Amino acid sequence: MKKNILNLVFKLLKLIERTAARLQGKGYGSATIEKEISCISNLLSIKPKFALDIGGNVGSYTAELINKWSDITVHIFEPSPTNLPKLKTRFLNYKNVIIHPYAVSNFEGKTILYADQPGSGMGSLSHRDLNHLGITNFNNTEEINVVIGEDYWKKIGGGEVNIIKLDIEGHELSALKGLGEIIDDVNIIQFEFGGCNIDTGTYFKNFYDFFIEKKFKLYRITPLGVEYISKYREVDEFFSTTNFIALNTNK
Image (tube, rainbow, N blue to C red):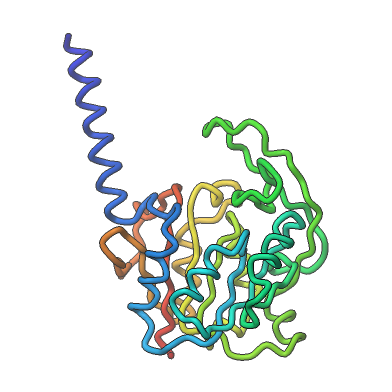
């Protein structure tokens, strides 16, 4: 009897823990694109003209950007050969959407994109071990091209950027470093953090330190709005999909 009561107590505590975490935005990051764009809009002091959607997948984020700001120009970076035809079809009649068939990182060349299935939103440059999630097959591979963000953007004559979104399954920090001086002038950056960062060995502290050095303020997207993160805390190392916004205080 005592053991049964203890098990019930632990189940209740886990429920409270999950609920409290979610209300703080921890683990709230899946399928929240409309909320993400709304939070960005509330933090921006300008009407954005240009955005980079890095890790565009099938274009859902770009579509929401255009839904919010119809005349915004969006550059989608998506390396998967499976998804590129889908993107081209979806945005065929949109002159303000430019598709780039590349992954963005801090190196240039060819590499392998791993996934559970072709075109998956879980596609990553890491061969992930997801047995704990019941995903035993992460062996689908596609050869892709990778560019250094800053070098490529300058090469094509890219100019002002107001919004950058990063959802590249654990390799966000590498892409941020590869963006170089672009970051200094961008207004707002949204990035994802979660289980993929276990595979890449990157921590929220790495992101926090990076953005504080760049003089950005950090916010976590929650069901209630954005929560300002005034200082680093170890409890923020939460490895379930969570979305953050970095706001440039120099702009």
